[in-house]
Length: 299
Image (tube, rainbow, N blue to C red; front, top):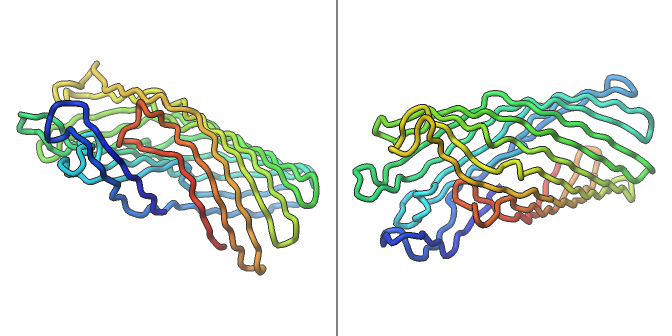
């Protein structure tokens, strides 16, 4: 996946001639490869088990770190955030129409930010600041119901629970020895509800639509606490508190699959994914925009 983010007419609200004015720039991120694999096996006519390894949430974006080309580098020139999970699951088929499944989601999350220090007149002005955070273990669960009213129609409803996080890590000014331990526990992974409808008009062709609600409003503030004094601003009892005020989102998906042979399936799909980030709290640390990609693959 190789998305391109372009920023037009970027303004900085101060009188510093080195950063104010209008600037256009775009991201310099590498291609993103999103792992997703799994297996399933039937134990009896009614019971089945499986497991999946995937990344439900992720971001890794880079910008030019030269403030003369990208004054936003003082805010952020590289950020990443991901949750990698392993989900063992079990499913039970009541009859030809109804099935239910349950999965335990075992996850690990990482986050980090790199930016330039804006401190005109200081010897540290322009220094690189790096922060790295990790939540070694978090968990949630998935539960789903599938209904098969006719031979050609299948409907499904899935609930994915919230995962509480507790990030710990370090922030430092590169090359100076100035650093502090930090913690972040105000950004949890949101709950989701998904409904899907599959229609199979003929044996080898199927069409599907999905609607996903995500509880992004859980991200209201980003509060980072410090173990030591840092930059003369943050420290014990003086956290960095950034308002986020994200909004809940709806995602709409549609796709078609053609099973050309017993061993090859071709797929094409489209989805519309709203951004949860309001204009007033948008920044380069967690940038996002409405997404409208078209995808194709084979299996």
